[in-house]
Each structure stands twice: as structure tokens, then as C-alpha cells.
Length: 264
Image 1 (cartoon, rainbow, N blue to C red):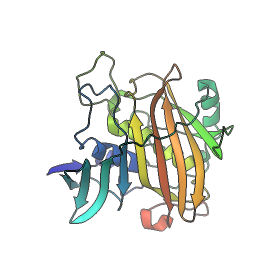
Image 2: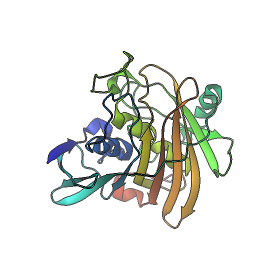
Image 3: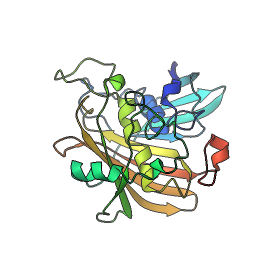
Image 4: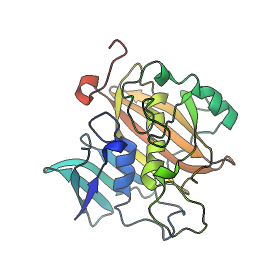
């Protein structure tokens, strides 16, 4: 048994962990990391059962079937598993100039249900939150709608491991998952339908380089009752896929998560 703590800095809603950061941190407890953390990670699926507590030690138990479970006070918070044979379908990228222009139309500038969110909160300063502010871009293929933004990883989210094949500092696994998280929610339109992350399936091809501008693109891919299905892909400065993810979001009452409605 090990422990997992989500520091308050990495909140999503004000009193619980950012779903992507928490999922990425739990993913690292599976015994499947590459020898060099820059290299390809396998596809991992994380299901969030309850809001992750902040600044509290969750017990993490590894199963004998490529699974890991985080619990708090006897309640299961999240489960991770190696998703063998599953590969998230990437979202088509956009030019960095297009992504930068889209940021001006980020709906969160006008209304944000969780303005202190680590990944997309407008109330976070540079070097504290990721400040990923996705705005609408042209749909592509079967995606119902797409959003995009730029992201330049700050040194404050550097990877803790130092067994790199090169000397370029990289963002942590948890920060990379966080960068792929909320953009999916904005593709599903968080201003009209407050949602929290229920499941995230992600594959990292290489960890993003600190200080290098990246483009992250999100897409809505469907809806069924309270569930919304989205995807997100992170591209490097040369347009190559760095990491990609698919999500299932669950519509919730904002009051239960300390969030706001547009009318508040």
C-alpha cells in the first residue's frame, strides 16, 4: 500500500482535486512506466468515483491485474487500470496562430464555474495554474465541435524523475494529464452544462518540454443523458502528437461541487 496526496494547488472545483491531475498521479502508481519517463507510456484508464480530497492522504492499493485503487476513509475515490488494446483517437491539430486567436473567445473569460481550477481557471496566476483557455475552432471530421489553446509548460510542473534520454526538462505525468482534462469539458460547453470528469483514458507518447509552446485541441464526440463524450490531444511545436485522451463527463448540480451557475 502507498499513499497519494493531491495538494490544494491542484484543485479543480475549490474543494476537490482536478480530475486530470489526480488521474495522472494515480496512473503513475501502476507498474508500467517506461525506463526513461520521456518515452511512450501505455494507455491507462482512470475512473473517478468521488471528488478527490485535497491535502489528505489517500490509500493506494495495487491489484494483481494491472489495476490501482485510491481510497479515503474506506471510500473508493478513483481506480486506474492499464487499458490494453485501447488507443484514444487523436483530435486533429490546428496551427499555433489559430489556437492563440481562439483563446480570446474562451467562454471562461465571461463565465467560469470553477475559476480557481488548476488547468483552466482564470483566477490562477502564471506559474501557478496551467492557464489553458480554449476557444472554438472549426470542426474536423466526425467531431461535433472543437476548441483549441496554446500551453507552454512552466518549470513549476517539471517531472520529478531525471532519467531522461535528453537534457530538456519535461512536465510531469500528472500535469500532462491535467493539460488534457478541462479542454474536453469546454468542448462539451461547460457554460451551458456543468460537468465533472467521470473517466479519462490517456496515452502519453512523450512528456512535453518545459518552456516550449504546445497546442492542445479538444473535441466533443457525443452525448447520452447526463454523459458527454469528448477527446483532447496535445501537439508539440512541430505538430507531433505528444499525448492524447478521451473523456466521459457527468452533468452535476454546481452547488454540490462549490461551483457557480451563469446566473449567480
